[in-house]
Image (tube, rainbow, N blue to C red; front, side, top):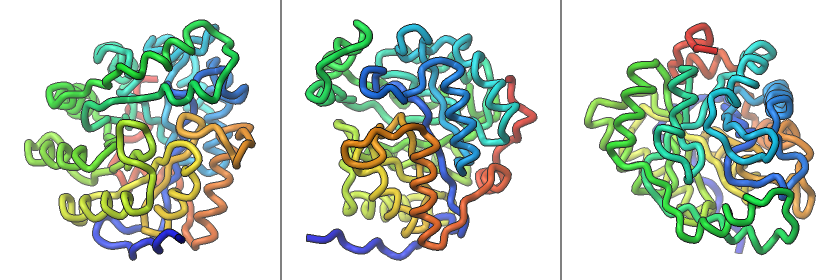
Length: 322
């Protein structure tokens, strides 16, 4: 049965321009899964710059240990690519506060504390973060950490309690001036976000990322996106904008639906390694180019970094520490 047509855009911050975010490397996929996953500082910087040139106004960044490709919280690994990206593009740099589910809170916040970026991601709750089904698709490994890392996710909880969230909002938001991409993996995370609005720790404009398709969170299905949007409309009225991140094969179909609903879109090798069925994406820029063509076919124009700064109330690239 064909999917229902997307509902008409309503509530929220309605703009004709669409924000394209590209998540360059992340902490979920491992180097054995794709030779195109950027690991070294040179590769991360190069792919980020190319993605910005392709139309990504926001670059969401994690770091990797260059020799092993293992997710890293070391500010030195971030410092190896941040200035290069900032010199070559005016894209908004968005640093993770989620890091990897196996990192401590202090590790996850090390880079954001050091570099005071314009924007950070913020997961709005603790959750099971089950990556182990990916083991079925991989038989050979480049590094000895990869298979145990994925297998261990069968008993892994990503911890972000209300106390953790409040600390991040205070230290990274209030003290360093960052705005947030609020990552909501399920409907309950929207209510947690509303809780922090009511506590006075979050003010508009609010930028919500609906994260769909991670085992442990909400599935990447059209009816769930409709429900997330309707719930956010009730909770936040006209003071929010939403973007959609769909992991894996649903990345492009859900991006197309989000654009039709008046929303924004995140793509990138952090979330999906494939350009089409069985065809590995050769780069992050290729994913940006693909989604850009989809949304422009709907009549949406891609927002520039300066338009994003104005829309989201960012502090400006001259007030970061890199």
